[in-house]
Image (cartoon, rainbow, N blue to C red; front, side, top):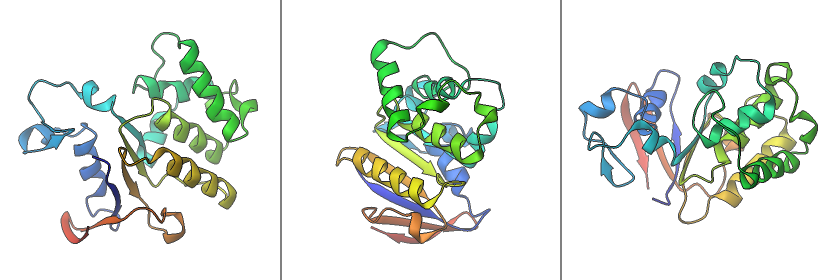
Length: 199
């Protein structure tokens, strides 16, 4: 809890598998001794009990959003960890969403179809989705694809503001300029094995 990790490795090294174990999506999570938030997997918690504590973005997740929803609706699915909206937002939830869009200066995109946005605009909506519920842990897997330098800097500042001493961050990137300088731990994977560990 509270640690800030950089996860690296070439494509196929096992990064996505490791993240899916942490995120509760991988069936091997039940066959191995894995502890999440202090509890061993398979002791009665549901996948939703885990997901509600994690904010997640990845290139794979981006591909799942193919339905014709408004941008703000896609961002709001971060409250329920689903691909489709479930019920209506409370006024405080709607206010948080509005503030995130304003932070990125994309309020004009809120009612636009997600599928009509550029890849970079879609990525901003998914970054917002990962933070709306103020989760205990954030996993940003190659989060800045399609973003300009200006938006990368703004997103780094947003993550930095979020990353208090009690929040856990796992960050994945191949590019040094994307990596926040306050991340102080590193795992490097190679062919499914931990090749380097820096604590």
